[in-house]
Figure 1: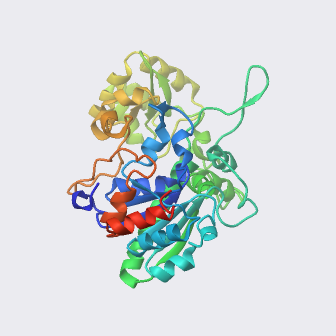
Figure 2: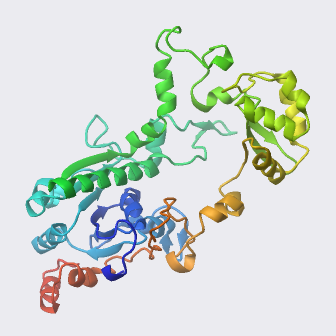
Figure 3: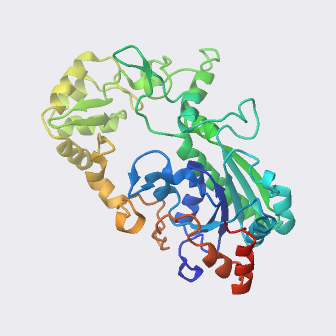
Length: 412
C-alpha cells in the first residue's frame, strides 16, 4: 500500500502502532477510514497470529481482521538503532498506539516524554485491560474479564453442576478500541490546530461499563426517593427493572414465535399498536386494549399475550417483517450470528470483504461516507513484511543506510 494509492477521509494521517493481540483494533478502525498504520513488531512478531480460533490456513482470524490494512515493520527495540528508527517513524506520525500493558514503550526508552521531544504534536494512546490507575492496573487479564467485571455476563450452571461461561457478545474488547479511535482522532484534531500533542489512555473494562450505562445509571437513580424517581406514566409510575429486564413481561414489546422462527414486536407507542391491529384486520384488539400514548408494553396482560401468540404463529417471519414496513409498525426479524448473513438488510449494508482479499470473509467498517471512497482493506501482514518498504518510502533511507541498519541487528 504505497501512499500514492491512499483513499478515505483519514488519508494523510499516520499511526505508529506497538500492539499485542486484540487492542490493536484501535488502529484497524482508523486504517479502514484511510489512515496509514505502521505496526512495529519485535523479531518474534505479535503472537496474535496464533491466538484463539479459527485458524485460517495457519493464521488466526483475529490477526486477519485486526491487522488488516496495516503495514508491518520489524524493529528490535533492545538495540539503540532500533529505538532510533522508531523515533524516526514518530517524527512524521500523528499518533502512537501502545496496545499492551501500560509502560511497555517506556521500558524501551520510548515513553511519551521522549516521543514529544522528537514530535511535540504526537498523540500517545495507551489501551489496556484495566487502565493505568486503580488497584487492578497491573493485573493480567483476558477479554471476557472486562465484561464479567462490568456485570454484563453471568455464570451459567451446567447439567453436572459446574459453573460455565455462557455464549455472549464480547463488549469491552470491541468497545475499548472504538472509544480509543474516537479519542485518538480528537487528539489529532486538537494537535493539528494547536501544535500540541496529548496523552490518553483507555481501559477495556471502563469501555464495557460505559456501554452498559443505562442499567447502572438506572440502579443508581432508583437509590433516590420514590417520589423523585419513578417509572413510566404507562406503568402507573411503577419502577421497572433496569434495562431489558424490565421488558421480560411485556406483551406489546416482546418476542413471538412465527410459522418458521421468531420476531420481536415493538408496538409500545399507541400509534404503532393501532397500525398493527388495523393492518391485521383486528380493530377490536385496539379498542379493547388501547393503552397509553407512549412506552406502553401492556405488561402482564395475559389475555392479550395469548391472543398475540396465536396471531404471530399464523405467518412467517419474512411476512411479518414485510407487514411491519407496509403498515408502519416495528417488527424485527430474530437472527443468529449464522442467519444474519442471509438477511436482506445485512446483504445490502454489510457486503463481505472476500477471503480472496483478506484471507477470510470479513465485515467492512459500518461507517459509510456518501461522497468519499474508503479503501478496501489489504490482507494482514506477515511479520516484518513491509520493513524495507517503510524504511525507504516513509523514512527515505537509501540502500546503504538500510544495509547498515540491518547489520546492527535492529531489523531482527
